[in-house]
Amino acid sequence: MEKIKQIPIVKKLGFNRIVLFAIMILMYIIFCATIPGFFGPGRIMSILNYAYFLGFLALGVTFVIATGGIDFSIGPVMFCCALMAGYTFGTYHIPMVLAMLMSVAIGFLFGLFNGFMVSFIGIPPFIISMASMNIAKGIASVYTKTQSVQWPQSASDGGWFRNIVKVGGFPVGLVVFICVVVILYIILNGTKAGRYILCLGSNREAVRLSGVNVKKWMMLAYVICGTLVGIAALYYVAAYTTVQPGSGDQYNNEAIASCVMGGTSMVGGLASIGGTVLGTFIISLLQEGILAYRLGKDIQLIITGLIVIVFVYLDVSARRRKS
Image (cartoon, rainbow, N blue to C red; front, side, top):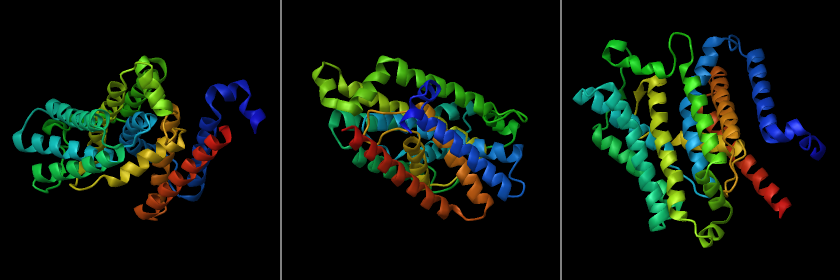
């Protein structure tokens, strides 16, 4: 195995990412062979619709986990963004562009709040993210009077915003998603901000003693996460239209599972944007396959939980071997 990992092309692409890609292809082949009608553009589009919003959530939380933190509020905050922006559009008839900006702004503010509380106040990430999860649910329910919100579908009513997912049969969302992935990859691996975020997860005290403003860079990770959550909300409603108050918890586990599966370490210091993307598509493909098998959402929750346990165990074991 070690010899395989030392092969130049494997080293460049990453052994973990190659394995994940092979798993994804194998899963797709199995589903196509065992589920009638699974192969086809309609099913692929359905997988992509799920992968867009989940991918933005997973990419955002990748930055937080890289610092050694965690954010369990991303799913409920995504729904809060969608509920509040959608309700404002439908009730107060603001322009769709403003409603979309409102969604991103709400996500940004939650990221700013979480980052400030963790970085400057010193509240543990687990505690503040659990608190933010409940705050997001509460604010959304009060603001919408516990009513579900339906975003418009027809172009004349403002449904043109759904073009962020596809135009005709062309997957515009995939192009946007890839562009965002490239930008985030450059930020994490090619900028000072990304290096400091990763260093925070490796040895925060050493970074602080070297004169780096630890609070600023840690807060930035949460702000990036929150902004991406606001964008994820737009892709969710563009694909599924209706949003229910008090929901979103399940997407926390799926986004975190995508990160961990992709090689992001739960203790921080190690993160992979490409790995997170592959993990996202595997989770999305798994979700589509489970629905096609008519096994129900509960089975996916069980499998997602097991995935987190397995990959965290592998991460911990690898770190122990290195030590």
